[in-house]
Length: 308
Length: 256
Ligand SMILES: Nc1ncnc2c1ncn2[C@@H]1O[C@H](COP(=O)(O)OP(=O)(O)O)[C@@H](O)[C@H]1O
Ligand SMILES: [Mg+2]
Image (cartoon, rainbow over all chains, first blue to last red):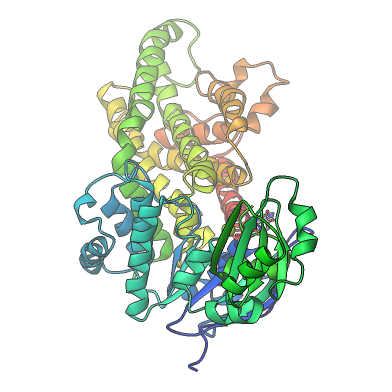
């Protein structure tokens, strides 16, 4: 493996007495799409800000491009692109001006910025909006513009903090498509998300974060293999009966999870599990067989759901 | 290669291209009518009466108005825009994801303010010359001290605003801080007119130092209280200490 671009060892972040990031270790290699999956408050944004050299490390060590963010902040940021969780485009300015000012912050020559703006707006499918103000753009367009802005300096790593949170499904898929393209062209992406499908779609490798700690690590597939079964059967029973029925389901598949509204049966073969449920004389209101997802991994590792 | 602060100045200038219309009234119209009303109307009365003891009334207030206008423009630029950059539009956060550092934002803010002050005050001084308030030379000479006055206000105010969570304190600051200062810093009448126990309070007003420095530069007979270099020292000290504090507070607030 090539020299990692980011190396974190026992990395921690405290806000006053509050431990937002609690001694995490990870490495990000060039060309990979690396994810941080975790619920709200897990410490993903805090970690991103430390990598982006805009938030000082409390303890542990962090190296980005072999540099120390505490002393080489501007040099690190010159080689990064950041798409923050909250859009912070200048809404008074036009689409073009937003990119132009950003290019100037990176000290790029004006002629180069102008050329780059056209390429990036084509990439972000905003070419016809070049002269329009930012304010009236849709959420998806603003997000794509923020990504274009983050690419203006041809960054070696693009950091995306919850890139599709708050977008409708269509805008979301359009955005994913743009990110696949970047991936295909060899970009290194660092993505945080609390959507397990987003992590599965986009990430080559990811860590699962909860309460400031990393609780699992690997490719989406290896995480599922390691921490879940191949398939899952979801059973729904009439309200109130759930707990009663649970004890009678015990022993089917390799393990079960009782959620407030349904029971999950983890089994490598869903059909056999369903047969067994019927054999035991149980009549669920609904039966759904599906493949395991990262949601199941998260549930197994933390005992909680990703999205509350 | 342009220094980071210069790139912030450039960004501020681009931003200003969209917003300058809103600032024309406060930058030019208000000072113009103040000069007209005070100088023309009130001035005749004063000059026919006891007088200022320091030349004609219009010539007495003209350099003071340059300094006071600088204060108001500076306060406008170092209050709401700072809170907005941190809390509302968050454009400071956007800039800081690039090689720009928090002190560059401060220097860029002050740098662009300096340019605006020079331009605005030069125009204002030109109007004063046309209205016969001052000669060309003294009018231009008074612009420098007025710009210094603006910067001496902007840096400490920006440092303070970088610690705010919202703008609730700001309207009180304008109403109960800057307005009284505008009126009672020897701007419209010599401080000797105030009861003597109030005079030391006026000496604490940075605007009074700016007003007196601008008057001195414009050739208005000097006030009997302090020499010009004391006024300069006070203003430079405020500007420098404010710049240091603003850099520190911006960093503390934005690199958390
Ligand atoms: N500037 C801050 N001051 C105090 N607490 C903070 C600050 N930023 C984040 N936190 C807290 O740290 C925890 C982790 O936050 P964050 O990193 O934003 O999580 P995530 O991005 O995974 O949702 C949260 O409980 C949050 O309230
Ligand atoms: Mg977050």
